[in-house]
Image (cartoon, rainbow, N blue to C red):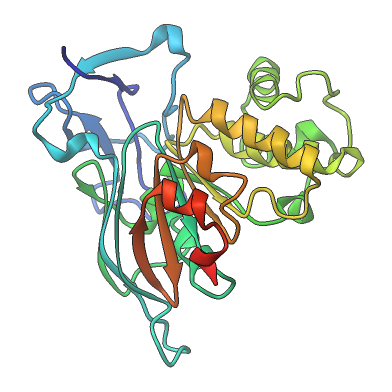
Length: 296
């Protein structure tokens, strides 16, 4: 039985259109290879500064056969990533290597100061590794491309809302987003009943976390990065958010960092611990048995 994976719309990622053009006035785009299923090639197309949507509705997705013996289906691949800023006496991240497959949830557990947030910021294209290689399928990506690929939800994201209303928050940087798409995105995170003109700060804590997810989902990323998504929520709100992440995992790849494995380990496909910048694979079952021992 063959494995299948979604073929994305024709143009997957481009460099940030705000960045300088190439010398001939073109931008870089990724486009699926026509003759190699499961691979992606880089082609340069003239005068296409606008990024095409990354995701289709399920009804309109095409599926292509995956080559079972090739690494292309391992969508996210980090190889010996190091991060040593000049202001730090020691590296913050040391030889980080991991892979994450489509529609998997990866969980990284570590104490405060271990480098969890730094790793997510690098994957979101907000910083550049000192050494190592970061690949999406078989393409090495630069930070500007990662910004198009990934959506990051920071810890306590409700502190960073800028819009006066829900619709303003969702349209920041996305002025052409239709009301229909906004409604579909809110429905996807369980906020279909709230009004577009509702102030974000009038929502409950759990609703604000869902709105922060919607802000990233409306950008249609491939990869969702979540920093301590359940921090500061009561038990009921945590369970609602965990259930939502389980639904989102059916369509997106998720990478979650947390200091507490208890809420999230049951839905994780792959797990690691991060301590003093060093990443170690760990079986989810081991985290279930000793959730606190892994981060002490």
